Image (cartoon, rainbow, N blue to C red; front, side):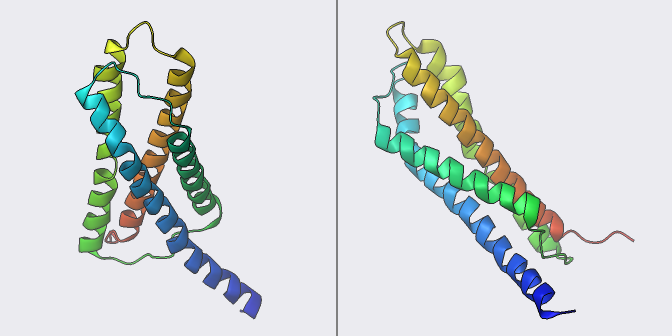
Length: 160
């Protein structure tokens, strides 16, 4: 094997943890950023949150960062780990499922509690903009949880 191939393999092995870390970091930032708004929706269902362009830009940036990392990993970087380890297999599968709990609970609060109580005076344009960002971020959370589950599957015991 020549050195160019070795460098490419090494780069891909280093790229995987970096891309996964970016996705997990984005997930943490999303949850941290959205917790106050989540609390507001729980306490005041139907009350439209004030426009906060700074928060919306952060969340949109996090969404883009997570999606770029996810698709780069899926399209160009294979999972470098393929070892049998039952503990890591279950641990990462658990984390993958656990990581989407916030997204699922946020979806439930928004769709089943907040939206039905929204008044007629709500800003439809703002609600549409936030709704699109919301759905995009839920998709990014889903992709990250799927990626963590794929890592868990890489540690699955080989069946003989």
